[in-house]
Amino acid sequence: MTSTAAKTVTRPVTRAVTRSVEDYLKAIFAFSEERLATEANTGDLAVALNVSPPAISKMLKQLQTQRLVTHTPYHGVRLTAQGRRIALRIVRRHRLLERYLVEALGYALDEVHDEAERLEHHVSDEFIRRIDAHLNHPHDCPHGSPIPTIDGHINHVHGQPLSDADADIPLHIKQLTTDDAEHLRFMQSHALLPGALLRVVNREPFGGDLTIILDDTTLNISRRIAGKILVAEHA
Amino acid sequence: MTSTAAKTVTRPVTRAVTRSVEDYLKAIFAFSEERLATEANTGDLAVALNVSPPAISKMLKQLQTQRLVTHTPYHGVRLTAQGRRIALRIVRRHRLLERYLVEALGYALDEVHDEAERLEHHVSDEFIRRIDAHLNHPHDCPHGSPIPTIDGHINHVHGQPLSDADADIPLHIKQLTTDDAEHLRFMQSHALLPGALLRVVNREPFGGDLTIILDDTTLNISRRIAGKILVAEHA
DNA sequence: TTCAAAATTGCACTAAGGTTAAATTTGATT
DNA sequence: AATCAAATTTAACCTTAGTGCAATTTTGAA
Image (tube, rainbow over all chains, first blue to last red; front, side):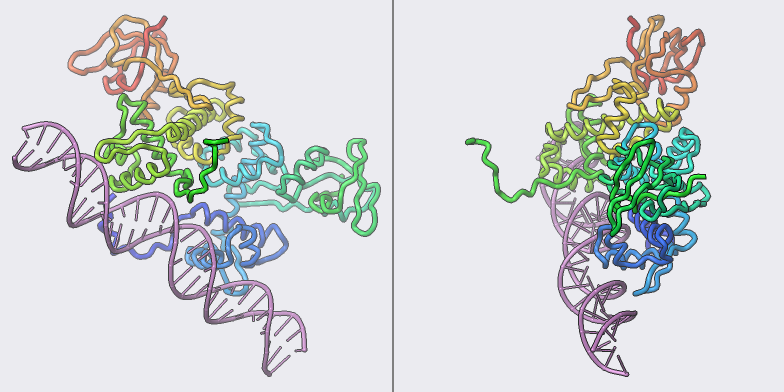
């Protein structure tokens, strides 16, 4: 590749969407949409992405010139329509991959996150198309999170944390809102999975354990774990 | 306890096996083992890896300090035991992935190379273990190349190019020695795949076409294509 | 013996994604 | 309203893996 024309080329506004860019956009999406907030801040992103705050500042500036975010210095970032589109594409890939790993290859729930986290950046659109078809176009990942459609639509789950649920009401699990492997192993080992039916029979006071009944089994779970399980009243 | 004493010397040798390193080792392996030669040379590697000759020289020096190759300047490179081990690991991943893409996801023969080329660097050992089990521990990739074992053994295919085969002898296809998508589409569309039975019924002189019979179908193929198909006498 | 081709080296450069240290801005608290 | 610590941004620099070009070295064939 000879690049003799390189000198007259104006600075490209449309730099590449690298793996890092995808990760940043996904993280901003997670803060600004999946968690209540409307904007993500530098400190949280630095923790989430495991880099220093200056790295965030620098990347935000770059993403701004790429028109993927709008960044108000010292205040916060939000995604542009284009940035959101890319973030949703990655989220879709991630969740389809997780589903595929569980259904087709028998992965346990706590193993899929890390694998999907790498693969989401490296598989082709064709690969995603094929696993989506193979899985019969699923709507959620194994943790119960919604899978965005190709054209960027996503239905947010509405449920309340099990830790807040009233006693003696039939509930079903909507979503497990954790990526922690230990939590997930615990949940899977007790069949605390999306779709499961249960009800709360006792709540110890002062943030103590909950007692629940699930499949005729009585089970004690900590408030901490219960806070990671979203439930809704069972119709 | 005498000779096992740990060397507490500062270690400059430990650098990471990056994606680039994996690609270089794989390319050196391909030249020095899969093609007749015992050593790979700079120029060929530069072409194979689509990189300038100085980039090769530079990387060879690095690989030498990592003890992954032995490089005799101006002559050639060969892999050390450790370098060969890494190269075989990547070849194994590549060929298992190709097989999986075809068997499990219905990829066509000409689509698998590029996909596997990326994925081989990014899937986990666990992923490879699972697809290997799922495929029931296959011995070859869809092109008929042998899949190295986990402990680094590989059985080389012995066959001759179909272009050199004598007429009227029952043959079967051992291997397709091309990654070119057009060639592969042609082969797949005519069922010229590993395992197929055929015999040569005519060879035009002066490097002209071959006429073969395969499944009661008569087929004309160019010497060029025939050179990419390894066959052996059918027992 | 010569000499051209191939390989290597040196140097300056690009590009992405980091780092630490210093400066700046914000906003909550006196 | 002024202050000051925490959060954030800027500045300067590092690393990996390339690039190109020029200069040098080595090899091997005529």
